[in-house]
Length: 335
Image (cartoon, rainbow, N blue to C red; front, side, top):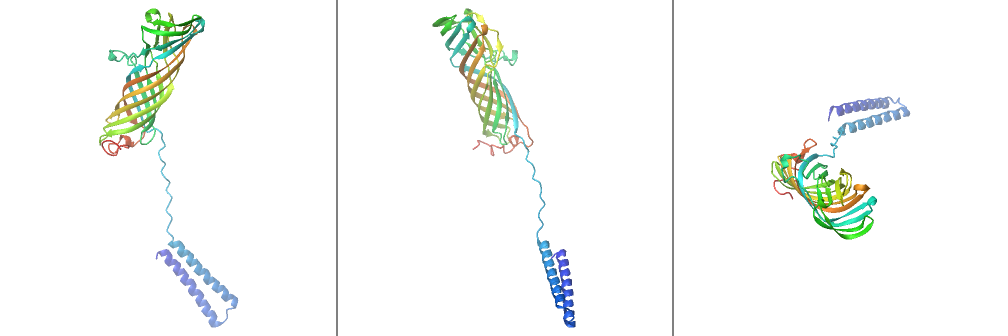
């Protein structure tokens, strides 16, 4: 029994004794009226009720103080990565549609062949790094496990219609119907380049799968899948039947692509990534000489090698921890 309860009992005892003595005196003297006796009993009951209430209050456990919950850190970006590299392309055959109303031309060049122009295979260190076929990626991971992200993906690809090939031409040429074969050669006044870039931009969704890591997380191996869509921004340069256009950049259509990659990360922050990619691009309203326009579509297969780094954007990022990375609780292949 605590001090508060003892004080309550003392008050009750004093009140009860006082009332009992009063009643006893009243009975002995037989001077108390019936009404006075009723009031005395009521006073006694009120004293008992007061004691019971105080006892319950004293025995009730104290309610714990409410502690405001800590607010979780609100962020949608857990880490960011940047990479740069070079690529090699192979293109499908395609048809090229040419329309030049001022010249009376509206024809199709069928099943044309094209190739890339790597640039990095010759004197890569003796020229600007943007001269060869290059690419870059800028991406972020959005969840705590850092296996879901988005990425800006750019490939500076070069598309060159192969010189000295026979092409079938069908349609209208100079106002006259044509259905024959031409010899497509720069010496004959023909060329068609997206040589300063067919230029694929993609906004990719990225999914990462952890494959392997060391216990100290200084080396890890990941598989990545990517899918996206975006614009193409080609540099258009061409000549048909000796009439050349004014070379220029333009937003020239759209493309979509699928990419798979293997990424090896060293010392937690630097990485090399080797990937393969399939892209489908549709080019439209490509400007020609004499206010003409061209359009075409083709698919591309790419091999890409890039190097880059990845950095955390929040404190205590478990993905970069020395022990127990998020997606690989033990050294070895993740399950």
